[in-house]
Length: 183
Image (cartoon, rainbow, N blue to C red; front, side):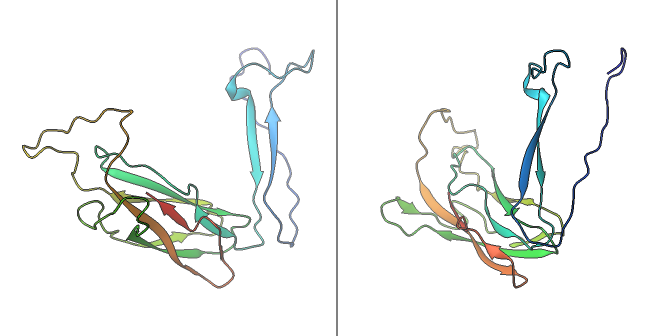
């Protein structure tokens, strides 16, 4: 970069083919031209992912389990589409109480979580992630309406539920092994 330049742009050509294949990744690093060492700082390395655009992909949750605390009003759950993103894909989500007795008490809709207003998630062509927002009842309030005091390191108590991918469309879109997320 020349003195006074604040940014520099460059292009990298990507070769497209018609074969479905896994996403590929590489890194771009900023380095010292004299000694070839990478410059210091977290912002001197960038990961680039070349997504496969010849396959509809595999859809699943980013996380297998999540924790929501009583003071949280919304739970954001990320759904990812990997190894391809051609065409539109539709995912239908359902929330159900966890029935495994070893976990604890099954959650109750309306008391522990709110039903999704729109359980259908649409991935447009090329889209790799979507976030669903699950509203949590105001269980974080005391009976008089004041905020409940919850310590940050306090272990959550209460009920468990499962966010599940019930259906995917069109045919050819696959579900990953992370098709359920325990909350």
